[in-house]
Image 1 (cartoon, rainbow, N blue to C red):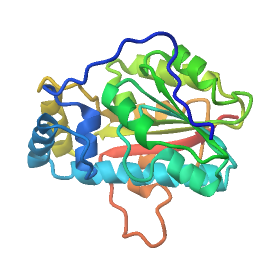
Image 2 (image 1 turned 180 degrees about the horizontal axis):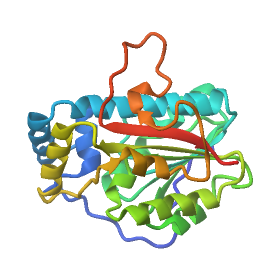
Image 3 (image 1 turned 30 degrees about the vertical axis):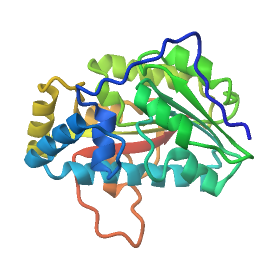
Image 4 (image 1 turned 45 degrees about the vertical axis):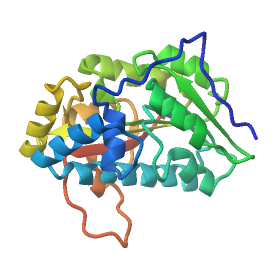
Length: 271
């Protein structure tokens, strides 16, 4: 077993603040999880009262990620994943999907929320053939992320970078693009970038609910236009069907006809 926790440098224990709603815990609540507090459930219920469709967005985002990972492992031959902004463990986590197809796959999860890290260390265990590691770092510190991830991943080999519903937490759009650029610069040719985020310009009710949430005192999440999400892939080779509403990204044949929702994403290869 090569399971281990990676935390670069000395770090003091972080206190879990149960008085302020947290996006990872609210997302977990919408996905049907139990790793949350009353303040998160109250915020989640207030949001769904305005926009019940957020539950569909949360679950569609998870399904999009699963389809991405399945393609990357089964068709692209990827055996390394860097998952930044992991969120709380739920069903079909990155390592479960990837190692279910190729047990030797190596995964590094990155988050900076103490509750996420506590649950990750307890629940996200690797196959004996592969590895799963956890990095306590902020998305705004790509260099720290890469240095810690290099203890588990070989950055001379193609790696898939996953940024699922994390870039919206970067308030400045240019800084969000810089994060993507700096992370991808460290990965070799043949690597992949998977991004999905809440989108603006599709559903006004969703935008109203998100704007109200951002003004509530919780950590803001910024919706971005489809063009802005597409620009994260500049310089890369976008796979068909490009950046689309996530249910439309290579839907499974047996699934119901997909509908457009305010969550867009894509997958691209580094030439």
